[in-house]
Image (cartoon, rainbow, N blue to C red; front, side):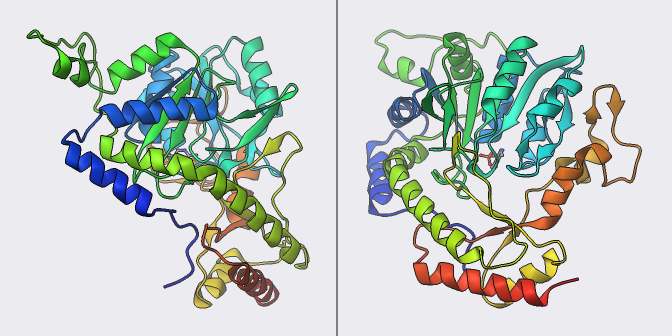
Length: 398
Ligand SMILES: *Cc1c(COP(=O)(O)O)cnc(C)c1O
């Protein structure tokens, strides 16, 4: 089997935690979910944390909470996992894609102003691959234009950002709401799972209702009640629950996060030392106000290097890689779904999978590759990847 891109860190603690839940007889949203939420809120420094079934569900609820409705516009990046754009479409709203800063692979704050129109209802920024986006600038624009700000923090558990004079954990809301993913491709996994964090009590109440069909009395309250009680459903809700089985794993995983991130930072340091030797290779850039959790280690290949050839060479040598982050606007789904790259301009009239306004996003997808980075990865493994990449770059020039 090829060396993986990432590998979840799961062990006896998680196994024991799941066994305990199964023995308890309470398996879906219940005491473990409540405990996981409490610990996650305290870890991030957020006032409230609400667990849901995945980050896509979290994004959907976040957009709904800030009032995004049909035909509204939401400013975001195309250069993200497709869930980011999809969550906007779940509200029947229109994603307005802004290009990225080629250095950080994150939304370029300088392009936001120009994308705002009368129909803009929110900004959905992404901390791509765990690297915090420029929240200071984006928040300033959001405040000036009275727009809610939602953070897609799917990849960013444990990443930190300097806001003013304080280092804050991503998820201590700078915007209105942050959304996390616990998919196994991220650093903390519950199999699947998601979390919303906010300082807004109203949002917290809504999230708790909506994730459970807007049922007026929760299972826990009904279970403990001495009197017969009938629930009602005052508005449309969803089944976005997390199970107690997942939450129990999440609690054990959260304890590991500081150690996992420390290890990743050391591994990235080693990668940098070794990869500096490859001419033209661009190593990831970390602004002085950001501390990434390095959910992905993404390098940009030298200009004359063929991405597919490099990836094939690596795979033949037993090393998995992934190409740069996808661009939603280039996917067939977004030939069917509406989107804009500038306010007022629907789709792009140029070539189907090219958009002049999103060139940096497209180039990042075409020129970057993600290298293996996982907890058990040894120094020897890192050396092997670096040496193989060097060979691949030498051989795979166009
Ligand atoms: C993984 C990911 C998501 C989706 O998370 P799920 O938990 O799988 O729904 C959303 N946005 C970004 C940026 C992601 O990387």
